[in-house]
Length: 579
Ligand code: ASP
Image (cartoon, rainbow, N blue to C red):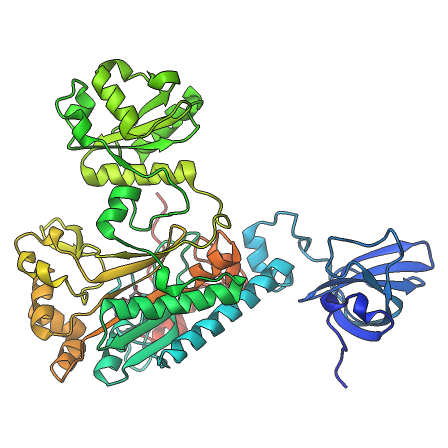
């Protein structure tokens, strides 16, 4: 016979009269005199109240097995906050399975607990309803994604963790080799090259829920190791990838929240449009406050700050015309910290009159044109930035988020494909282009001719999936022709020798019959966090690292004795002196 007959959180009025056995943790115990005790018992499904005649020594977090009979709660004692609140267990006998020390923090959802403490005692933290809900939601999402990919003919292939460096632009985690002292494996930043080789190997459609490892600064939406829906398809165009991934995320959303997302209607926007309208390559389209082009309005203006700038754009913050001077000064300082020269603010009064320190430098015509172009009404706040176009977009994009972004769980699921990313994001000090994606990304064909003459204007066949302003993932059509690949490498300053050393195996493979192919990598942790309404991906990962990269539970990273290091041919340097 199994240890229990029912789950705590599942009991309902329909169970009244049944004798049941439950197992779980004591959430709370209240004594009513010597003869009556209430013990709330919790398992992953929820909490139920158990009534014990006589006193019982069962303290919070003790592990118990309880036998009793389900009864309706007496009139007036129904608890509408609890799913089981209409019933209780009566005539209980309590069997103690495990005693527990008092927990280091209360397990209710209300008391704020420091994250380090939560992670140090993650096994206790995980008992909380929110964490169990998130873990289960994550499992449903993974399962739905697997099914959606398999229905579309994708086959799951595992790729190794001990590999050579992959070029995703982050720092590698290295693993020393014992058999070849002084040599290192790299942990995969993604299975990028391996999945491309699977295409050369005739696998046709590959996917994997792959662990990727990148040594970069951690943030709310970034961990050293993260899980990616990694996919690649042969004989495929960009549209084929977008369709396949759209189906997978629609299935994930449905499994997580029941939301119906039509995978065929996820909107698309080019990178340029996203930058111009939202000042971001991952626009949060849940709210307006779009960037408005104002440059033509101020051609020949007498206001120096605008006259000197190649670009002027602005955002309209509805109803925020009442912001106080202190807040406006703080916003201006913020813009300076983000790298701007300053911020022009104008409050819209009745009849389109503008209240602003700069209003007197603008002509009547300019002021009227501004109000008209921005569709401003009384009570609005207008924020304008004048600078080079890239800076203007960047600063207004940040301001827009700062002032308008709704909480993570508001506004539904706004998936968006951003396409036609630039192939290169900037030039380095040597004047060489820096790839925006990895160096295997195919340029848009009609832009080929400008590769050498005007590299920054070259668009790529790369695309991102965005959800509510979070970048969920990226992908691209790959270069499958060795001649194009060599041309890109040489643009990047990777000579034949270096290319051979770093990616020789890929270039070799391409000489043996590479199908055209394209793929995608989608961050599962981010997707799950958004579907769970969490701001931080650590809430949907069982054992995350802290923001400073530490695992307080297992105490990693930790020093290794010299004798052990010697096996790998390694010795540590003394820590750098603290200045
Ligand atoms: N490997 C890429 C990444 O991890 C995704 C892809 O291009 O498929 O971002």
